[in-house]
Amino acid sequence: MPTTNEIKNTTVNIPDKIILENKYKNSGITKRLFTVEETAYILSISVKSVRRLLERKLLKSNPALRVKLITLESIEAFAQMTL
Image (cartoon, rainbow, N blue to C red; front, side, top):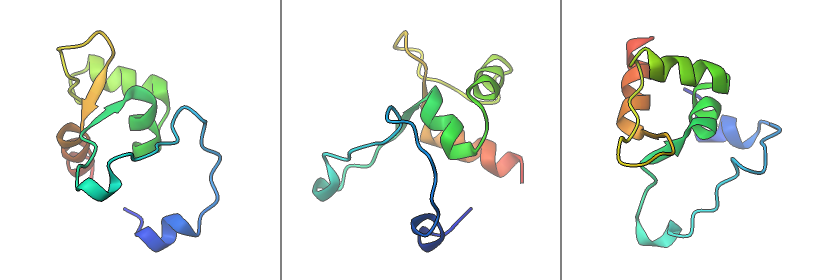
């Protein structure tokens, strides 16, 4: 996984939808649920691949909503599994 300095020094075209404004920056609250698009960006894979991983149950989404929101724990578990 790239370090913070590597990320800062990298120029990437990020779609406007994925650019996150952290309103809670100073409150210590961290984001724990991510959209399919955000998950694809985090894992450096396509949106279609994220949807396939959800279908194969290799990623878990929050079942409470119609919108697929993938948990941070699920993303981290998948990343560890694929190392």
